[in-house]
Length: 393
Image 1 (tube, rainbow, N blue to C red):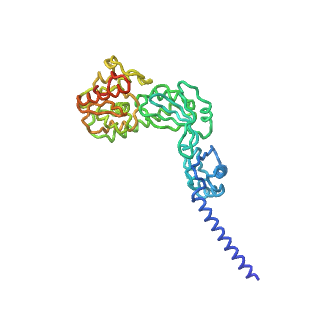
Image 2: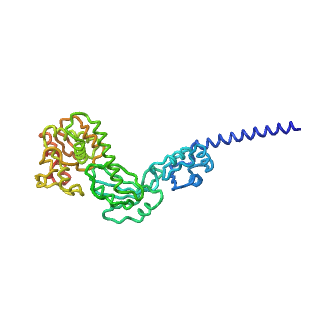
């Protein structure tokens, strides 16, 4: 009888062990296999959130199939205490392990609500945007001009909302004064700015900030990044360029940045100015003249006057030899690289060609022919045909 009982017990034990092994295998498959969501999900991890709360939230919104299995997997992998505050975009059918990796890796938020301060050449804008999980793209909710409009209530609420992403996006070619104006208008930042940083010293980029971030500290980070970029590109430059210092290369890069908006033209435009410097020719570029008039404070919303082109100022490259004394904007890495790695051409002139790009020329006769074509385009468009032209006009 005892032998029969023992045999039944062992049989039951084997069955239980097999069931347990099967359950573990099933749980592992659930944890590492494709998730239930057919669309991307925006997962928000609140500050100081517990694993229990996040697990249940994920199950409720259909990102994972089981809060219990998600918690067990996080415990098993030693990540139960590694949750990072933020909003994260999770791909369709992401496994529980994928979700866990995303919300414990941290880094900038990749979805949810975003307040973006956009520092642009023609003005500053503050945008409120929400991520559409279906497309993975931010969609604009509110846009306003901080220099002329009051901040809408929706933006204030978004800034105060836990989990909103706050960013400052600085475009290539903006001036340091424009950056300072934008940061002063960013109500979610704090601190005073004592002085406008040196022109050209700020790196165009997108900067993630927190509510209450110090404005001066952000400017210092912009300066640090630009200094690193310039040092790296200067170190990698070829021999034989007409620059004695990195600052001179930065000045040239700022001119290239303002002369063309086409990435593929930067090195070609740079070649024209390098060739002119090597030939002892004046640069004759309008953006430097404009900077001498505006000092980088706003834009000159009109054409240059003949009297302005004839006036001898430190920035009038129609009247002075060589480079102006400082950069005329904050160039991006691509423009700095172009200034230090110009194309090898024998071009000495260029003028707009009507397509957004430029027509390049080796001789004054070729250039004058290009200018005539540009004048014809201006006339067809009903634009003034007596405004100065670029480089050699």
